[in-house]
Image (tube, rainbow, N blue to C red; front, side):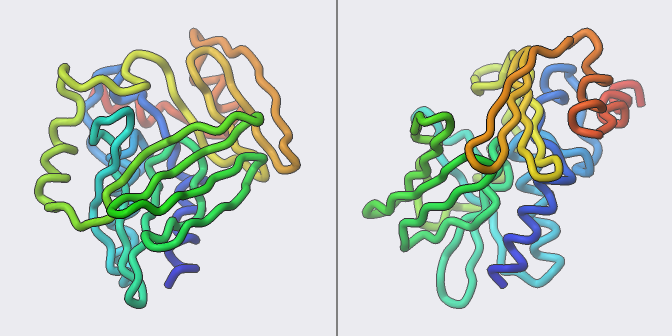
Length: 223
């Protein structure tokens, strides 16, 4: 079951991009086929996981002291795990609630630290380590999580990506991430490069770097 849960993670990081195009363009989300922010990707993972027989549930994590990140909690063979599919970075392995782990992928490094009632997740990139999130390992009220998803774009909530472009996917053997006007490309053996992109021709830039067509995302605004 762990292999299945992680295969779903990998597939969705390759097929459904993390992006904030819905938010930036004020588009009402009509489908979860085209990725989105953490909530959209989490709901997509949850639906697929449950459809394949996994015991999966919605969960919350704190970023910057606020419970604004959504992910999936899995109960597998008597142990609790977390699938962070909604991360803009490629967290392709499950995080167990009761055991600290560390792994590397695409030149990036993740490690977790188990506390009394929480789990801290850290990311190291380009030699710099930062705390990504803190999640309570206890079971939250799922209706509360769904309510937070429904109100996630209200004006009182400020996300790191509220006003600046974000778009990321696994592409082949690389992880690629557009942040503002630059694309960062990560690969094995700590490979890294950065390029400036032309946001005025964003669709063509994303098609070139990601082989992904964003027109179905943007066209939803006119439907």
